[in-house]
Length: 176
Figure 1 (cartoon, helix red, strand yellow):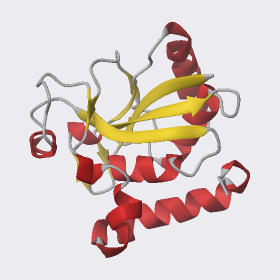
Figure 2 (cartoon, rainbow, N blue to C red):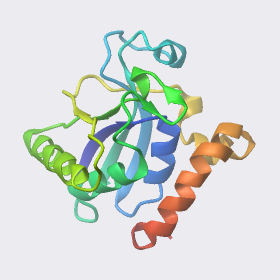
Figure 3 (cartoon, helix red, strand yellow):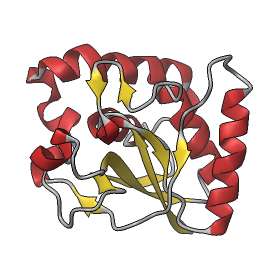
């Protein structure tokens, strides 16, 4: 059965690139959520004045991967203890947030935060935010790492190492 999940954990290029490789993930779309400006542009979101987070919307086959497993991966692939940032990416648009689409996802998100907190002494700052309109990012942001990453310094220095670490730890969850 196909379901959706919306997650924000820093630059959407990083999150998108990792989830594209996972068994059970049907599609990954980069976009913006959680702000006040309709149809924001990348430039507006980068200014940090719209309130949006860079996020990904996943469509997944729940018979192959559960929402709880997706959240476990999410907490592994970014630092949920950094408030409004991931590494050198700073601002509310880079916050760590889960946007549940129903009550079950909200309960699973709460459980995932408790579980993640048990693995670190730093406080988890990931927020559970109400799902609002998800605005797909501009076409050039979709599948960014795999389309343009090799020639982009940010992707070479930030995204590629995250992908390599993930692939080493999650070999059994990767598409062939």
